[in-house]
Length: 227
Image (tube, rainbow, N blue to C red; front, side, top):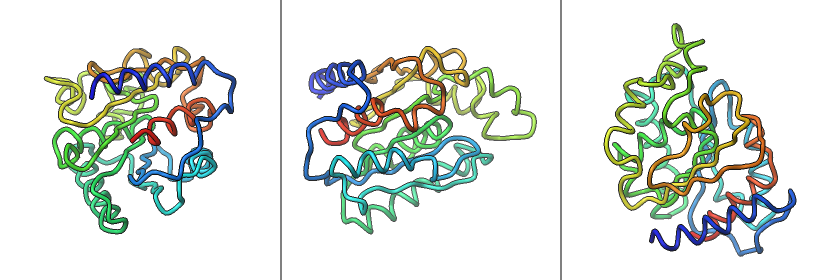
């Protein structure tokens, strides 16, 4: 399993170095539904470019879902449980056994909590973090006084500490992270990679560029297509 992931990581890295817009080979569409989890102060609309890119590569629209949630709520006490219920609905609607999760920024924390401490180890095949504050971001201190989502993103928070206390990538789930040396919101930038994950450094992207960058979208599509 790790060997296959390593081989795919190499392919993803090559893809990210290619010219923007170069897509992996077309496929008939994944059997596994995709759940997109947006970041702080956002909504499912931020995934418009990603959804268009996936559909252009043959991913059927009825297999792509974007979860909407209140980003000011607690990752562990509220959001992970609500995501669990949403995933259950997706599985029931599609008849699938598992989903793939693609999370941007803050969305990495409730989705990762669900995988590690909820039922996600059984229901998630691939977990992909785009510019996630997986070890916290110092920028979150600017809004931590009034926003629980920000407090959860601070270095050393209850959420960050517990997610990284033991194995950072537990269970049979395939973990993938994408990070940029130019990300102005994840400080330090090295917060995103996880031990045991397939970690990919992108080109010089700003934080929200991950949502629209053709090379990142192509790389994510390649992972999802591989199953």
